[in-house]
Image (cartoon, rainbow, N blue to C red; front, side, top):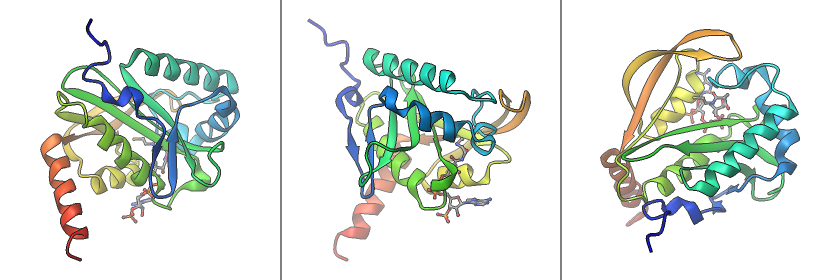
Length: 201
Ligand SMILES: CC(C)(COP(=O)(O)OP(=O)(O)OC[C@H]1O[C@@H](n2cnc3c(N)ncnc32)[C@H](O)[C@@H]1OP(=O)(O)O)[C@@H](O)C(=O)NCCC(=O)NCCS
């Protein structure tokens, strides 16, 4: 019998531990923090699908959708928390898609910005995604007026592949968007340079 999760090794990957963080499955106990942090206009305005206001009902629907998608294996959405307080969500990382390309996204509560948490969490998710042998490209991108997220992409090795306009639900209009991608080759190059940096040091 064929395993319907064949080629989707991320299916059983949670929880994922990094140096400071744990990327774990959502629970409905995350609703209040999800609504609080994603409903901050500084976050919602940078996330195309997030409306304002973003209520606990929106957060609950979002978490339900992520849990359903995780169960089907088509993608992976995880709550991010600090290891020392694993029940307290501080952000989210998600990817979804079929075939040779998946799309990845992330947000963090404003109180947790500027500490390298996004870079640390997204790097771990990328490493899990590329365990799928058929995956060649991870696509992402950010609104042009989001230098923090563009910097996260850059630190992770993403390259600009184009420019588009995407509708921001929170702003109620289309916004300039920078489309970015990370290829398996660029990811492997980063892995190699990281291991060269640690070996022999
Ligand atoms: C984008 C976001 C996830 C970054 O989270 P974070 O944990 O602060 O990210 P990191 O600390 O790993 O890295 C942020 C980088 O951006 C830089 N940065 C932050 N604000 C910046 C600004 N206004 N201009 C230029 N660079 C900026 C930081 O200095 C850091 O780079 P460095 O490590 O070279 O110093 C967070 O700001 C967020 O959730 N924003 C709202 C939602 C969002 O934008 N999601 C992504 C949609 S594409």
